[in-house]
Each structure stands twice: as C-alpha cells, then as structure tokens.
Length: 193
Image (cartoon, rainbow, N blue to C red; front, side, top):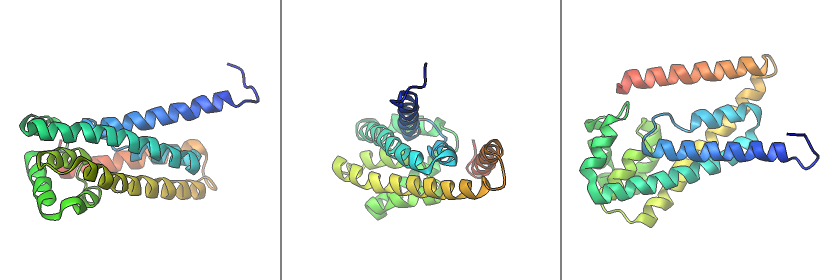
C-alpha cells in the first residue's frame, strides 16, 4: 500500500483504532475482564487526541454490550449471574453487593463502580433485573463510563509526554505494559480469579 497524499493509510489506522476500541468496549461490557483503559492509555502514549477519539468508540461498544447485559438481566437474571460468576474477579458476593448498591443508590451506583473496581457488566445485569428504565440506564452509563475513559486518556497522554523527554517510545510502552500487569496482578490478588 502506497503512502499517498490523501492520507488513506492514516485513515485506515484511525479506523482500525476505532474498531479495536469499539470491540474492546463491547467485550469488556459483556464477558472480557480487561478494561478498555488499557488500550486507551496505550494509544495516548502516541497521541492523546487519537486516544480521546478512541474513547468515543470504546463508549459506543460499552453501551451496546451494556444494553445486551441489561436485557439479559431483565429476561433471565439467574443465567446472567451464572455467566458473571465465571468471569475472573467476579463472584456472587460482588454481584449481590452491586445489586444492593443499585437498590439503595439508584443511578449514582454506576459512578461508584469504577472507583470500587466493580465491573460495569454487573451493574448492567442488575439494573435490568431491577427493571430500571432502559433510557435512564443509557443516560447514566454515558457519563459513568466516559468520565473515566477521558480522564485516563488525558492523564496517560500527559504522563507519556513527560516520560518521552527521558525515555524512548519503546521504553515508555514497556513501562505501560509493566504498569498494567502490576495493576491487574494486584486486582486479581484482591478480588481473586
């Protein structure tokens, strides 16, 4: 593929980033256990602006996955809970805690999930099982997911710019991968596999 002045290779790259971000958001909102933040912060190492665009695609994927889990929770919460319990770092106690949190705090609970390390997919299933209005679920999901995505992209971009003054891009990427591995090791140690 030639490098022409229309920028098509770059456009394909942007399309690829958008597709990967969408798919990662969708997967994590359903069955995958690694949050899109890993991808988004990795993109921010090269370009914060591209990472911010990727946040929109990750959000879109998360919303599609969230709606699927929400509907499953409405239709058959027991089978949805059985699937959730098979996902690493999710157990019946966490599912029950989120269910109670939604019952007590309503939509505010969705903003606490990321802070407490509780996956969005659990909130989606339990919101559906509690017959939350789908439009309300979507409206609260947008800021609850996007705030974290955008803050992480901006902070990762700022950190990368500082690190790139001292280290090569490969070294910064290695630091990113190492950091993500350490964080997930601690997360799985705390919540279990």
